[in-house]
Length: 337
Image 1 (cartoon, rainbow, N blue to C red):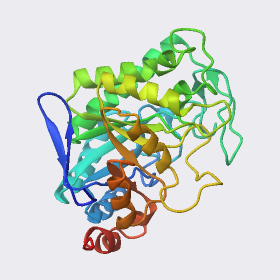
Image 2 (cartoon, helix red, strand yellow; image 1 turned 90 degrees about the vertical axis):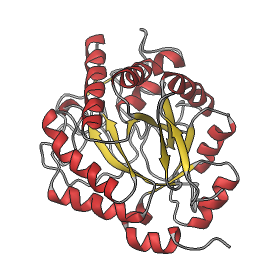
Image 3 (tube, rainbow, N blue to C red; image 1 turned 120 degrees about the vertical axis):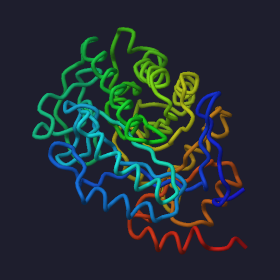
């Protein structure tokens, strides 16, 4: 088994998706949208370019589900029905290149600057740790806020389906809002959404269940393999949480970093700097496909990792962004010795 082998991903008892190979274009913020979050010609050019990578699955960047969850000025949005036409054009470009299309949903929670998101909210009134800056302190969310978030994620997923995508991914990593619910660092609630790990995962479980009920989308989730932050999520807690998510309807686990952000841990070098986390989850025997990520650049590394059961799918970001066609020529089209 190698990067060229196809992969059948079950969606439900009625349908499934077959990815033509094991390569995934990782979701990467392009900052090409309008200030209102709408797709521009530059957004379309960006995804037409990425689709030339010959990847089996192309993920569209983190997209805010409500203006209260916007992280950056020109971030893509799926917060309104007016967004559907633009993201539909992205999905069509990806499909024309022979790939499946996925879109990642996010809410910043307490991880944004006030000039972008003036009224920050989070599970608890705790400043979200960030490696590169000091963030403002958010207000603690009420139960009504939580129910509103849930509705926004579900409505955004319905828009993703209307736009013709195959997959939707919940962004529960990199310190953003859903990661803040999962992590004991930022979730110190004493109600049904805090305390034990099942309670900290409850909002995400409820969102997954509703997306599964209301759409035919295959559901992915980006989670930290662990928080890599003092007193944060452990690998055992992530395995527990992922079990709940799979039971609720998730078919692909996308394993990245957690509270503190997406940056490479200082002590890790070389390709696959987060792959030991995906390998841990593979060894846990979870009933889902596993995506590994972290500076992956070569076909040889992907083949080696798949053969050693470190992951099922390889997400590549910067190496494709530098030149999708060049990457395809050097990696996807090279013969295996």
